[in-house]
Image (cartoon, rainbow, N blue to C red; front, top):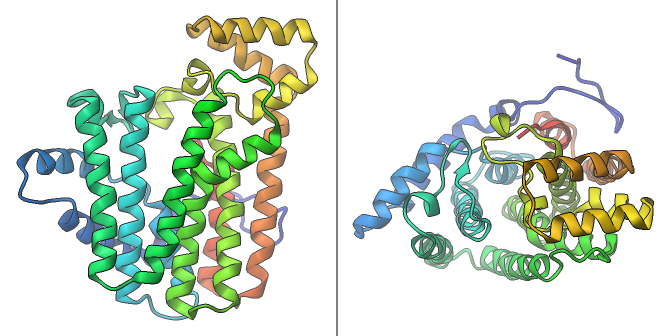
Length: 336
């Protein structure tokens, strides 16, 4: 273990358990609520819910909601409920994504679409989305409804933009930033903003934490795109290289395309356009490394991470602020 130190250049080994520690009790309550909210009087939904609850997941987004909320004292019951709903929405996105991407493993267990079918998977995702917003309205969390309604709207735009940019070798880094901001970072931003709103109301803390979550989310997705290229499938619990096979032009490829000779870019474009096997995917990985894409993407992830850390300076230095700092390092270090 590397000793934890302060500053934006700190390098520390951080596990998801380290992030869970300060809110372990509250996360237990979230898990209880999830078990309750997943079920209904439709047997098929209960079967799928039981399967999904097996994976447990990292609970990264609800952990952020709880940590932010606890910066200003004890976690409220509303914050526990809101954190649970954030996880419901995140789970809905994963169920939909697995069906769209034809993924067969998630977190080391079979996906919903692989056990049942795509139709059932999409409807299950819709059920989780609708249940989340029903619970918010039922508990009169109307400001949280607005935060999450905006986030989910932008997420759908990001997903469509990703489809639109498939195999588009002219895609710019600016377009990529918009795509990952809407597809991924907005929900992490919302998770942090909700925790701050429920602790401080509409003060500057809400805006700072929404920005913190956005920077953290940008770093998170860039690292995710790096891991899809160079990660280990066994460690990640899902197949790597799926972005390459699906024709997604992520930041490591954008930078390599910018640096590589036209003949090499043309070769990679043809390779990805004609359907790609494991050998071809390995060629794309080599391309991303050889022409600086992976190194550049790591630098950009670190840049967003440093911006996120700076935003924490306006908050009282305590255990929960330190854990939020650790969450940034966790994003940079994660291997799955």
